[in-house]
Length: 377
Image (tube, rainbow, N blue to C red; front, side, top):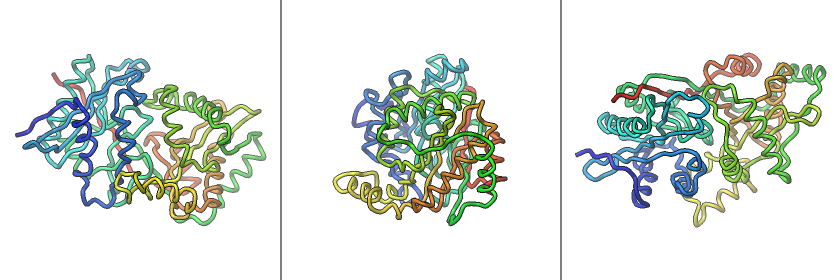
């Protein structure tokens, strides 16, 4: 017997949070999320998304055992920006059973339809500023920090239900680097002789002011991107608190012209290289293990992810993006990081793809997909 139940209490929320441990049991490439973070993510009284929008969580039970989950999401900030009657689903997990998936998708559609929405897109975990997309290829390695991972059969579950591809997102990788590409260094030398701009690392002693500068550029530089929605103050503060303990200042860069911030590049150590062995727990010893890796032994974390890189439109002709690549590369090597991922990048973002492929000599190594369909009555 298959039954879909709304999560209504702490007991149900615990089952919702713990389900991925069942779905990915024995999968060496799955990175267990931190349970302390998951409890906050699904707490409507604490997580900043719920200050402006709404979501409900649903579990699929088969013979009383949880076998799937989904969140139905109404993002009011997205609707105010685009007025497109679009709802979202996220946090989807399921055993390899089309009936389970169909019932979960249908329940999310019903929830969205009752709120006047006629299209559904996902997976998107609350907003586009968080984990989005389903992994389409290269299932043989773990995800980088803040990137999703899933079984290959998920693609069939989506498409057999009637979802179609809405947008593909790409990830690029540079591995085992020992020196900066000569072509990149020459281009940046020419750019810096021609244009007057400065690139500096973030000042961690004035973090609040620096975050304001980063967000100012982010909200302007990404305003024309497909699906982009501005972050709220609470969402910004929450992300800052989550990430400040793992930041390497040399890898968070701000570009300035006449002391005005005009570009940002944010690269983080891939702490998934640590979390993959912690089974989601920080206590009682996990927090010390994580801090040890950060403060004493970054050499064991050799991978990074560049998750933000953008320049204000009126300054994009100056080559600041290439300078960001150069200094991220240079500073990364100086801090013992020899490999890194650049993600995610819209497949139809030709300018950024051209820079990575023609100057950096990189190729996409992972694809993530957002699906969409009309909501049926």
